[in-house]
Amino acid sequence: MGARTDTFSTTRLFLVVNDFLSTGVNAIANIFGVSSGTVKNCTNRFIDAVNKLESRYIVWPSKSRRVELGLFAWEKYGFRECIGSVDGSQVPLAYAPRVQP
Image 1: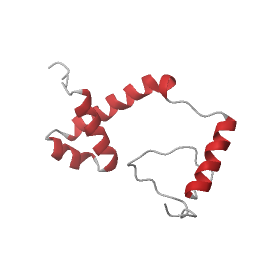
Image 2 (image 1 turned 90 degrees about the vertical axis):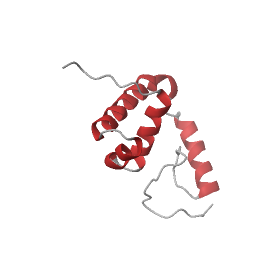
Image 3 (image 1 turned 60 degrees about the vertical axis):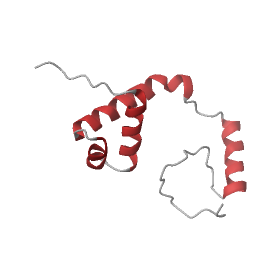
């Protein structure tokens, strides 16, 4: 028996991985009508793709830019030394923000 090749579109692959990161393997497998192994394979393919683009699109800010971003996040939202965020993600906080936006 040969290796199976999934024909997931990039959009469907992203949706599977995005839902997996916020929900869990079995729930996503049920939603998309695929096996939990397929969800894991999609997740690995997505992570590999992101890693290949890392040096091109994901950059760490310079020290001066980190200071600038940290000050902005503190003054605007009450987050100490925050240099970035991802919209739609659930991030556990170590402490409550100073200001509730």
